[in-house]
Image (cartoon, rainbow, N blue to C red; front, side):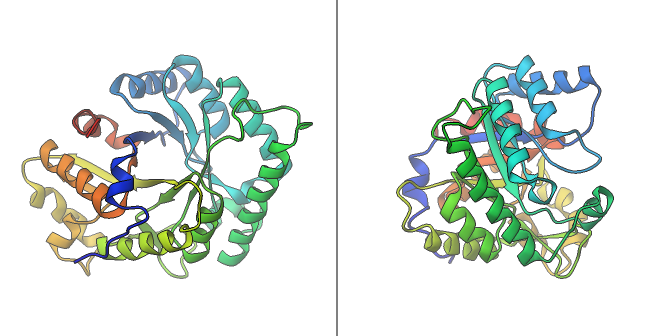
Length: 309
């Protein structure tokens, strides 16, 4: 039986409404981009997100363009690679984009994990510890700069633009517990020693331990953070086993049933996926779910059934 996560679990989770986001990952022409953003709003997504990878759209201009063709969704980075930024320049970008989007920005930050992107940008990659140290410095300096009354430009949102921190290592969980309004769990971890970005899924039991560890670190917070999970796959089907079987080569140590229980995979009928989403809220406290662009349409009927429950 999984451990109960009292500070973040069912009682707290039921009191917070669900939010749903789509991470738009594919580069596009101007009209394609605007059409995707309008479609995300039509489907009911609460947040439109953009990643920070070379070879993808630049996050801040893309979010400003999204704001121009939408009215309701909030707009966020998911997540900025801290190694690409220094505090003064990022503070300027954050404040400007928050103003240009009418106070709809949510700032997501992470350490970065693909060395080749740093190499192409001519930037140091560093060790995992050095990347976390840089992220901490970036967060603390951003808080100082953007809270200063004389900072120009000024963000619209006060006391600050909401901060999301993504990561599940011990030091990242501590950083989230100390600073994040939204604690984002990836549901996957880097292959040890790998610098190409290769990830392995986090099992349901491993995620139990990570969420419990975060709960311990966040126990002294005045306000609980919103808990986010990035969903990698959404497939609506009447045959869960047939769809899941090809995924087993990615997780050879897992049985088919264990693969179907991975928190980052939602496979089944709409009703089965709704039940899984509700169960994961009870088990972990996740009320803010992000899906990838490829799953934007498939997840829409699930959102419609889960809202208000």
